[in-house]
Length: 599
Image (cartoon, rainbow, N blue to C red; front, top):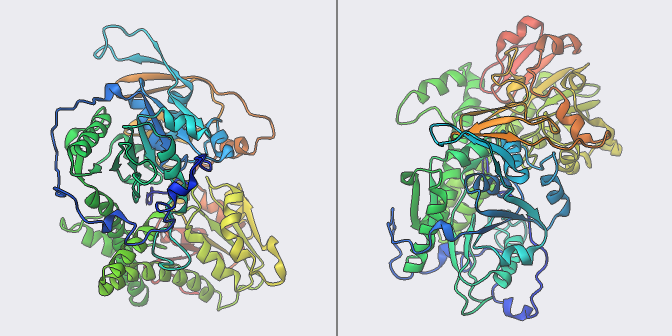
């Protein structure tokens, strides 16, 4: 999800195959030009398939079980939405991590996404449902069965699946040939080996990244492998899944490949208009995902490069963004200057494009894409150094408060956090204390990401960095507050545009479901009203319950923040969520892309 992502972190357990030698030639572990499907010679009619209409001998009625391998940011939400729209199909999510599976089965999901809690509760726990009279002759409630399950039992789950979705991690390789660019396929290879050993003949394998072949592991056994990249943005993944702007399905240019693609098309067509489902060859499908993320990252780096000029000249980057965004050829999306893009997808996918270019001898093209990442990293460095400059290069004895740690709003994902680079540079100046507040990130996740930076603190004083669950406590007696995440609650308005504890899924309101052990709730979606079953109350010492019950959706009261701060009371806006109106509270204000107030 990423901004747009392919970042679930599940992996099935070690293979139980009795003939490991048969897998030797398959387990490449690391993507190389020779191992990637992008570099395989085309076979047959390897051309764009378009909207192929075939006589479908394998309709979705024959699909009884779906296995999603990987219970992360892609696998979990994808499985939940599939289960929601196909109540007759059993969807199992497979992951080797028992603690992650346990969280999916609890009131405290390991993934925070607006609306996800509600969808999971309906399909995991079952619900009473009532169709609108216009859709049904009877408005009497009926019981919706449970059809989403979570498991660590790889062999059984894979063996009974008609469709297997691969949603495991494919991080960037950080060693050896292609370090920093090529894809590390270790996790993916292990999962695919498990699938190849246990999948039944004729099963359709659907993957979200790069596809190794299965023929080496199960010679003579028919498998069709489809490329179905996700286009999920963290913070709106459920909306992206329920109302996607497109579904991309890549297949082999063979009759069996087209038939498998049509089966998957029919699965999505239960709720997605068919004109939004695009069938292509696998090469196009896989490359389209990389290019989509690279293009979005390019726009962000471009406006951030302009923000540096604005800070030197007195221009306002927000006014420039508004002016150029009104050009219909450009549009306003992804032109918000800030600290740049984070998350695991943009950097990873740009690195993959660079590796592809280098491998094909396109060095100038690789350099072009590399510069997008360079500008992105430079933006965070400039922001941190601007903070230091406002204190005349001396942070000793100062307290700095960081608002936000996730790479974007409405998510608890700490990977590739923008805050890490900023905090690392600030720590080098030996401040007295750095406090962090984020409404959704878990303390252990924040500390894990900051471990390398904290390890460099002089004299090993790790108590300099503190995590708080209350924004006012984090900002109390701070000499400066840095806004690092674009959370709605950090904005100037007295109230967020959403009610506390409410979410939006595909235009449907979900009220009150953010409370983990709330009583039954009603949610209406696609003409059906669901009465959610109440969830069991956790133990009194449950840390997750305390986090959820905190008023995290309440808009911050900036006058209260200002009152508790110490001079010179700087506020540095790295995400464009504030404006100079803060100065009326006695605060000094500085923001990316504008000259700012002088001391």
